[in-house]
Image (cartoon, rainbow, N blue to C red; front, side, top):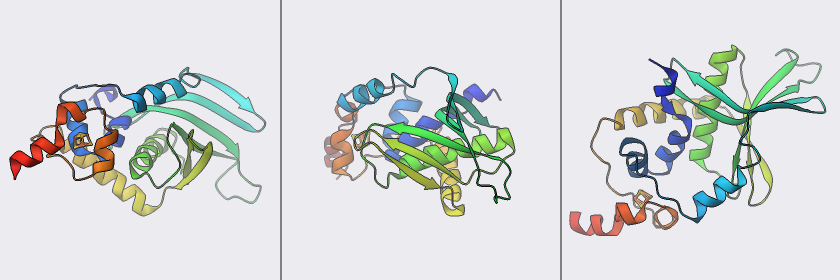
Length: 201
Ligand code: SF4
């Protein structure tokens, strides 16, 4: 199978946010912009070009294309940083850190963690190196969050990948029961979560 046909990393984020949203966007190709999406695109404008730069001892690869044949996922990581380990590290001279940029505020956003962890799993497969953690830069409060790739997060990420892949061929999931997510969702007028729930009851 061509890696370009694998499940995109960004849709794994959509899957964790809402399986129905994933279905609309990935399976049916529905895309509607709202202020959250426009702001996210705007904030990504400075990092949307592939390239390599150096800041001190850190080498930064922007817009890195990665994939995993084992998991059948692929996509672009906003940046991959190569940094020096401390001298006592048994892991070699340089460590690899995947980095994603998000427009919101730092929090425990499992959807972002799944996307980052899946990117790390791809990078590990491509490089043969173990990756202990990644980072997410949240624009809203301009802070970096370190995300440890624990065995539990790896297992949950792989389970989400498998579930999203199976959902591609299944029926459309029902609306989720999460008012805050639905209010922020650009697909609300297509999904009609309240109306669908009323009809179902
Ligand atoms: S409106 Fe709610 S249920 Fe519908 S796709 Fe968006 S988040 Fe999911």
